[in-house]
Length: 140
Image (cartoon, rainbow, N blue to C red):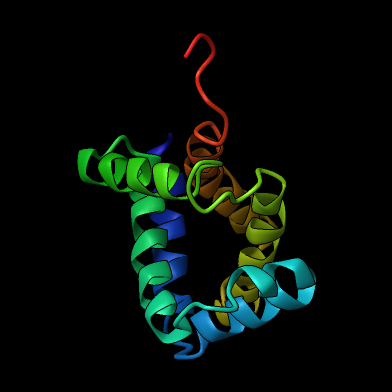
């Protein structure tokens, strides 16, 4: 992926993180956008989950640059979110990304439609990787 796109997303994420409630706002929005998601987090320590999300977003952004550490991190997410484990259905990722973009848009004072597309491209690569692990590989 174009370095300028990834750099723009990194900078946007940094600006958005100035909002100390960014992760809380994200989970509030996600659960509001899809009430079924709330049930998935019923037994989750959301304070811990917010920290995990912050790290996962950093890794997802780096994943789009073929970063080896980020690839390993996204492989772990892919496995943990698979049908055999947490069973996060692929269709939930659209809601997840839309919720993320909406809270970043509010938190980043420099957010624009172009930056939204950059976010969707960069995070979309990690999401596609994670979704590809939902079903078993053909022939396995």
